[in-house]
Length: 156
Image (cartoon, rainbow, N blue to C red):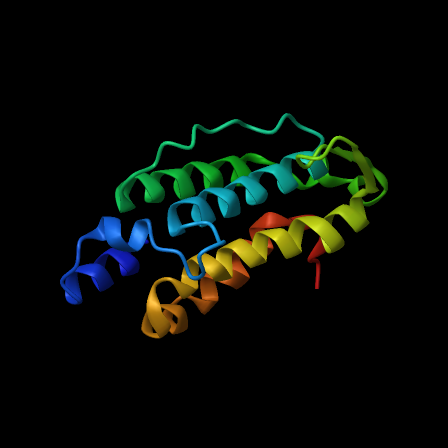
């Protein structure tokens, strides 16, 4: 987010323009993309670890607010221990993704077919807002986020 803030300063436009921008009219603005990416990072990790998913208010309005949210999310994920993930591949995960019906998935299916695709979609969409220069400089962040999001599944 610091690179996005620097980008808006370099291009001489208000940060709110970028924060409220949409890549396409029916897509979430950058503000919501970052919130959803952070939500998936914490909720996927929490569900696989068998702990309560922390609830964050969606009230961020500045780049500094987003830095704080990302930091809070990384702190939560960092507090989880490998022991909490033991057996999570066979743990049943119950989802209620805004539909009247609930979904039940085994841990490995939840991670591979739901959690990671959703997480990466919102992270990459958020990063695309920041322009190609920023995109190139943060590819490493994707790998770090991937490793943090599902530490037990990445033993190689």
